[in-house]
Length: 322
Image (cartoon, rainbow, N blue to C red):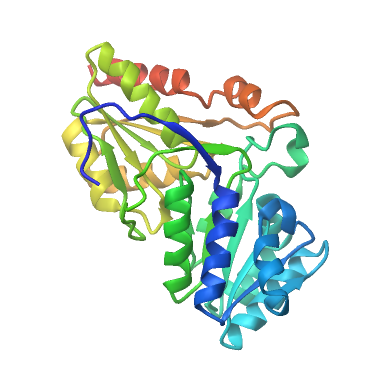
């Protein structure tokens, strides 16, 4: 889409996990090689929609994510296109050895979708919050890692994942996400989307924090600050060109993510900046802690993941930039 100079009207939309389930079911109608594995959480991951329509292509693996990953890898090796899904904290953490040995090493065509990522799952508490998933999945050679911001980008990127030959991880959330994109928006794996033009600072965001970055840019405009907003929906491979251009043209970058700052998107962006055009950087994310049990809104506010925190980081960056 063409970068906007006007304000976005953010309307409530579906949770990205629901957009995943709906798109997956549509893919099932179009391609009989699409199969699904789930770990006894199909109602929560919305793979139940696929199971209802295609029960013969749905495999309920029970509460055994490591086994589920291996089953999915076997299906991929047999020529199927398996979408394997569970909560991110279970699929990634419990299944990491299998993801490494049976998926990444042989490079099989498995698609892992981790739902309930970040701390915005709310009251379920820290044992079910995945704040390490992006870092862990980016560490596996050969994996494409996607983090859609809304239902439109999720639908498009699920289709892109199905078309891509090789392992893919898609991060999805529990809570409803504001709709950012028009229905006809085109997404390309590895290419960021510049949502708002800006010359003073660039806010690079992913997932739920894209909407917060847009809100921050709106508020900053009233202060006379021109903030560029870039949605990094593909964490790996990164759009190095968009990042380098932002560093060169605005000389200040703020990275915002619902993930641990250690090992997340910010670290990956900083590496590109260091290698191309060093500039001032600030980071909005979870800092060396686990969250607790509360409503999603309370948690995002307490742990510094709302527009107010993005604005504060922008001000720090601009002060350092001089």
